Image (cartoon, rainbow, N blue to C red; front, side, top):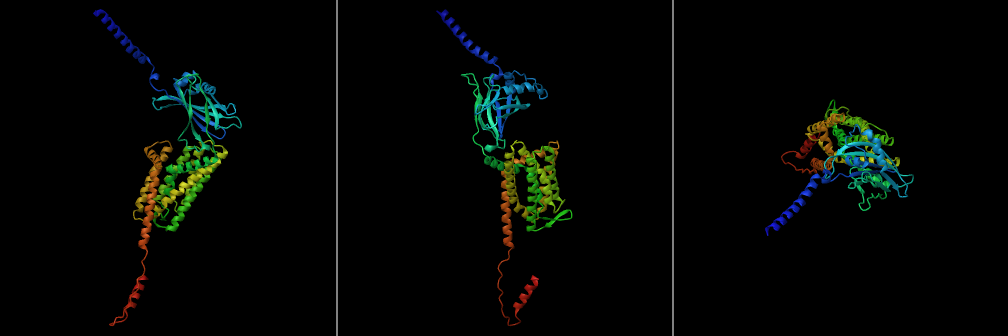
Length: 474
């Protein structure tokens, strides 16, 4: 009676063991790729007036598997040897089509390798490719069909995320955020890759103009170096120079005139340089301009300690403003705008710069005038000048090829724009209140009438009081 039960028990144990061992063996033998989410591709579109630039971010392992191009041992130095094969493969799998059914022209440019990491994935290598998509004459760049199956045609689990990084006509110009257009993946029912319908809506020059006004304001507000140069030049404006030292005041009206001339000269300098460099599409190297800006701040800081060019601050602001304007033009150059868009952008960008610049000068003005009248003025002025000069020296070294923590700390100050505006506003209100209070206390009260009395024992004493008061007055 026990034999059949023992046999049945043994058989059940054997089946249970197989049920545990087989899945465990399958899991143990699975590739690491099956156990972790795989990285996806990213296509970032920059929409221009007559073309679309696509930045392709492609995982190297999946690209090698799909394109049959072994990139496992490829480095940045050896990438050029496989560049032609990569470009050919990409052109064969990127086919934008206009709404009228006509194919766009596709050209693939720069290629480079990098390392990156996506959410839920570990670090991996990616290939970054730049492609230019040009529609036929008269076709709309804002509405087209994006027939794209790079990697997806072979790796069925792969996904492509398509976004817009820059779209001037839609008011998207800062390049910091992206707008998702859609995803491209294989249809597992038909095993085909459906094309993505791209509809960017209607753009307008007005939206581009307003976006550039905002971009210009943000640029001067977060551009710590531009702001420091102007403020350090304005710091000694209310002071009089005696020899090689600041000594005494020039008066409120004259100080206001100096501040106005310095601000206007700086505005003229950077506006002219910005217009000439941007409209002329001059390819100016970046590091000499940035080093020039750092040097200009250092000169301004030294001038705030000891007068270098008293009375000529406006001329210096004009000359150094030219360099700051060239730096402003780099923002427009990176956008690759058409001539019409460039002119509109230039006006909007410069308007934004000037509006925020005037706001900052207006907020700083009461503090500058009050600071000059305080006993602690020399100490505060020297402290501000030394801090500014230290930051400028750090920037100058960094832009000449010597990175340093001082430059990094000075750059990070541009991220605290809210704190900057709040501080300037509070100090402006405090300075204005202090000025009103001191003027009220300094104002003489109403004159009290003199009471004349006759002294029976002597002459009229009122005449003596009047004569004494007149003598004290004179």
